Length: 163
Image (cartoon, rainbow, N blue to C red):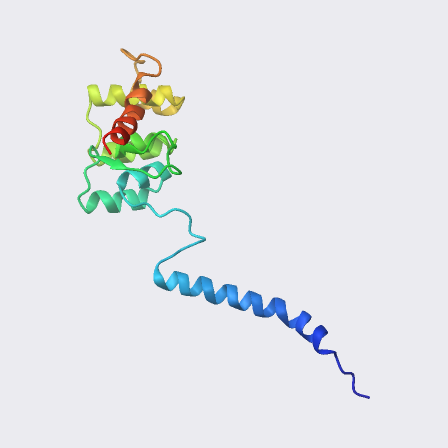
């Protein structure tokens, strides 16, 4: 006895397999051309790498010669829609990782003195207590709440008005 499936039932059973194969081929083709839809954001510079908390990529950019004190463009989904321009050490604050700050220190990106205080004030504005404690173990001196964050935000605003 032979059982025959109608064509509609056969297509209904095979369609999901065909769709899955097509999706896999599309993703593979995208990966081959450099698009990585499932890998997340790929940093374009050291500031983006620092903001995303990706130490290996941050080191790669620094070893390639990027200046951690230079101001870089940063996509809004990495730090904030209000912060589109930041230095690498400023962007590292948004990673909320004291380890990232320590890495930048080891790489010579954070000097002692004024720069350290300014970064501690930014960490205080962002309420990152362990970073504040690391950068200013003797307490914050000369920080006015909101000023450091306003300074970084103003850089984005002033860049937008120059366009």
